[in-house]
Amino acid sequence: MRNFMQANNELFEDLLLKFNRSEGLFTTKRWEFMQKSLTFKRLAFLVYSSQQNMFEEQQLDTLLKKMTEGFKAVGKDREFTIQLFLLSRILMLRLS
Image (cartoon, rainbow, N blue to C red; front, side, top):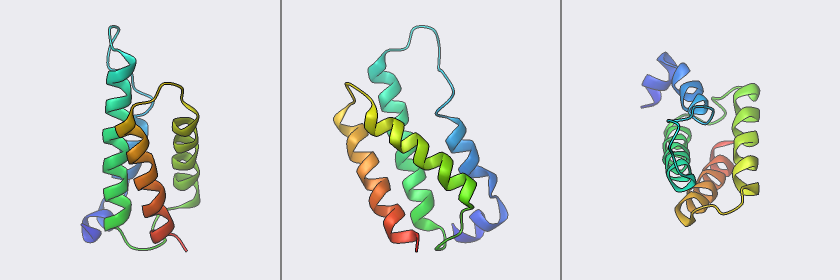
């Protein structure tokens, strides 16, 4: 996975862009939180499987803004909160 991330650095940015996408006109808040939870889970795996300090400051800034929006969200799902804290722990492990 580390070799893949070194060769294809756009995967991280593609996952961050998923937060801005709306799936359709008739989606519920619960569905949105489930999708964001899954995206946070994928980002956590991506950060965990990459090398330490591999990501640029701009990418991490965008990720931290999305995480802050997630923590401030009202009526969030329990799974969503779990994935946010998991990503927070992994960021602390991988960043020096």
